[in-house]
Image 1 (cartoon, rainbow, N blue to C red):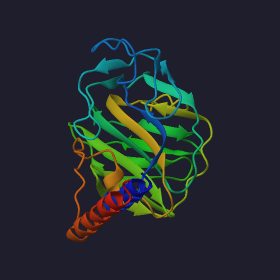
Image 2 (tube, one colour):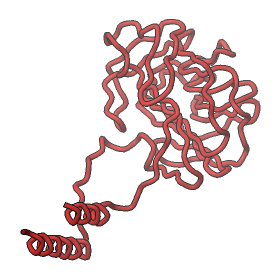
Image 3 (cartoon, rainbow, N blue to C red):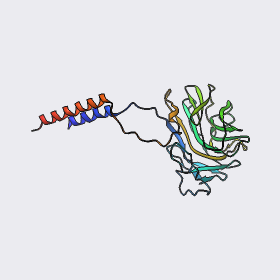
Image 4 (cartoon, one colour):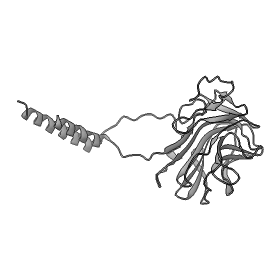
Length: 264
């Protein structure tokens, strides 16, 4: 039995591939998938529930459930439609570092007029960070510091992400980096909002929002492949390189011989 355990342990080392970098999800809002009693076309719940992490958010105004979910990433068949006037979800500010973090969301805008807040952690006037629509362009905001970005607002679904990685801000549109800078955000304080701004009554988003995530990562460990933009993942079948296969065969043969020799 001891020999068998040793062989299994060696086998695990052979089969296992190199460890991949991982995100630590601080808050996730799938915008419907975790809510109970969803009716497509009906009013969104008084609270939208978090997914992997986070706290429930409270409804303000009249957001509506939509059956038009994000086209890629984690499978989605629900999103939430915001009206551009009063609708949003709000919660307590989320404790986050000011480096080695990211915010991402899938969005579909119905407007290119004015500025609109997609998702924001903090007070957009003087603290925190988030994703904005700035007229006909996409961008990120560090409250009281900068509003910058790139990419043109279209009529279809768009994946947006701001990642601060080792002191460098990287703004992604559909997985492609379109802007970089080094300016640092102020620590977030205030509230957390999706679809509107609790500190500015005119920055409400008109359109659909889905699959919102806030995350952190170890310094130097971020890769754009970790963003929620890939097709639904296929779990690979572990394979052995030729040296690994030879080593496994030797281990099993030795284990078998020793087992035979120690039989009573």
